[in-house]
Amino acid sequence: MTVIIQDHPLYAYDPESGLMLPSISGGADFPMADIQRRDAVGESGAVGTTLTAAASVDTKGSWVSIVDPIPFNACGIWVYIGGISTANISFLVDIGIAAGGGGSEHVRIPNLGYNSHGGLDFWARYYVPISLKKDKRLIARCQSSTASSTVGVFAMLEAPGFYHPSPYQRVTDYGTVNTGSRGTSVDPGATANTKGSWVQLSASTTNPIRALCFFVGNQLNSVRSDARYLVDIGVGAATAEQVVIPDVPCHADTGTDVLDPMGHGPFYATLPKSKRLVTRGLCSITDATDRLFDIIAYGVD
Amino acid sequence: MSWYVFYRLTTGRMVSEGSEVPPTLDTNEYGVLPLADRPPDSQMWDETTRTFVARPVKVPVDRVQDFIAQPGVLTVWNSLTAARKTTLQNALIALLGNQRFRSPSEPVRIGEP
Image 1 (cartoon, rainbow over the protein chains, first blue to last red):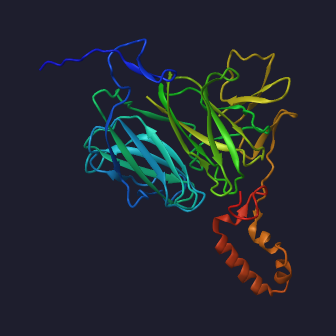
Image 2 (cartoon, chains in turn cyan, red; image 1 turned 180 degrees about the horizontal axis):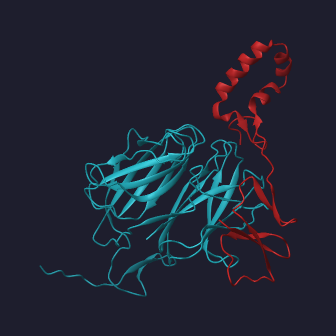
Image 3 (cartoon, each protein chain N blue to C red; image 1 turned 45 degrees about the vertical axis):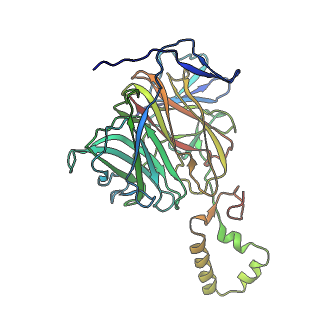
């Protein structure tokens, strides 16, 4: 079989002229991403598959199957966490795979954070560009700040097309605090609308980072004030930090008492391992309790 | 785990915190406070004393008390027997659910911006 690839310039939209013009670099006309199929899995009446935390606080419960088997070799997964718990509980959810039919569970995405509101109003949504192999069993489990709590989870798997770049293979969490099933606490400081001090999530990252997601949590504060936040992610030694991801917005309000959105990213980056990973925040209010939030970062490589 | 807080010598403003002191730290510009561990959320940085002080405890407001304080309600409330006060209070608590307590800055009326 002979494959002929026609090499012609890459065209790009020029906003000034309104025309599609050849790009300066030229090259083959390959898209940057190519998703051929999406399957939603684990949904159950729009509340997701139920996960139950262990009878001890801050302890992972049993694995539950989301889909068996994974229908195709996936290059990315959307994870939705939310729905069916009572108010003001903090969760950490693992997404994993296992051999079809059971056994050999393996965590692929650790400790995705979620704060419950007490209704069905808020979902934490994450997109993680990692590979998940066909015919494995997609599974999940959770821990919570209140024993035996339940939460819903479902997912959307994406299958790559011919041109899609190779997906990543690994997710490493930074800043997870097991006690309270939450993230590392961040204080934006006593001056409104001014960036606070940098907080260390990791003194030395375990693995390189090619994409970064993160969770912003509510500190289990169920009487929050209205507030707006901007979150920075950075790297570098103390007093020499550099911003990698600037000014990601989220907000809290008195009605829901969660920070929204909870899940952020992925933000693509190229960070070697063994870097000091840090975060800081800005808040529109100065209340000493309500300005606080917590954060977990997820490095993908 | 040892913990270090870095602050500007001129202002006392905290700029960073972590588990290691970088060898390149400019000690003419930054001070370092060594700690046995990261302080809990019950403490916060004080720029004047350049140490951690107790974070003010947040006292949420009980909407049951907001209800009693409504114009005219207090008179009716005071006319009730203790048993009837308890019955009414329990019914309000059940009805309010997770909206029973509010932040002092939050409006009295639920859902009001």
